[in-house]
Image (cartoon, rainbow, N blue to C red; front, side):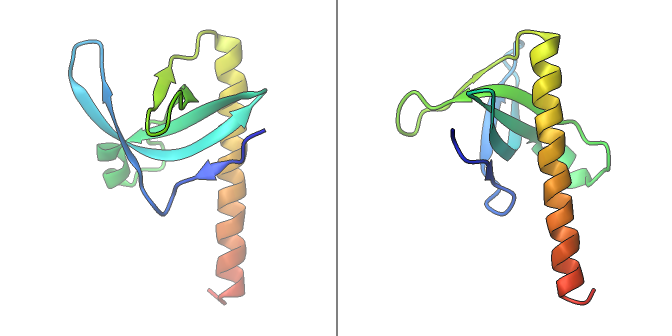
Length: 108
């Protein structure tokens, strides 16, 4: 099983082309495994700049068919989406707990 890849510090950017051919730059929040598949969590860059508590997060199936190639697929069912959303929520909780622990160690 693949490792979680939280790219918080590197701020990798993926440009999504939407159905209307408009493009949206998104920051990669995390690439993570769920039930033998990999998924990616993205946030539109403009949402990240707002630093709002309830920013939009986009979840997709993720694969790298070849070196340097990224393939994103829509999550097909509500059941699959719920499982992936819960896994991402747990990742966020862990990241928050790690940050709180680091702040505690630093005496903040």
